[in-house]
Image (cartoon, rainbow, N blue to C red; front, side, top):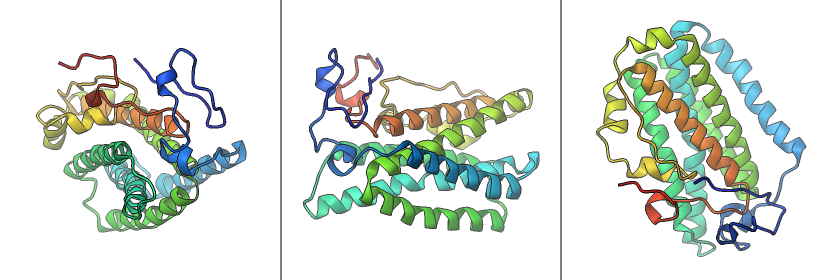
Length: 261
């Protein structure tokens, strides 16, 4: 089962899915946000493309710099979820708005990105001081930017992160296609096995808002990057859905027509 979507400007949920229609304060976008123009969406996308071409494509150029690039990408990719949580915690503290579901969702997303980061660190992506310095300082500034955007209009903040996650998906997808044979002959890092195979999968399930029950197969490094790429695709789907009135689904809260046992 996958969640259907409608535009934020529409007040009508799909007729065959009336239970998914939300009130005016049921998610961050409907409570605090408003639709954004195509021009603003294009600006968000152009900003990400500019950062990719000016920083990532130059500073992390070369095949031997792939893991460092992924380390920087994952350091930055965690930040929006921290920003969302900070603002939502503030709203709850002030008694302005409370929806525990979104705190859990964004924490689950940050938990997923943390394990991507741990994998890249184990692969050696964080060995150079300059790589850590660059990634961490971009992340620090990005944290403040996303907080401001989320306060002003959650729709814009989610749209910007959709572009970031799409970039991550495309980056990993290209890497997989270019290095399939090599990656299939390399072992999976312990951090990946601990997360995808031996770990508690509750938080992993919680960011699968499309009601997809996933259990990645991890036998080699290729499988690890496939799992990470597919995680990024799930984040893209969630960011897109959060820009609408439709609720996100939780497998463990009984909102999906799926048997997980």
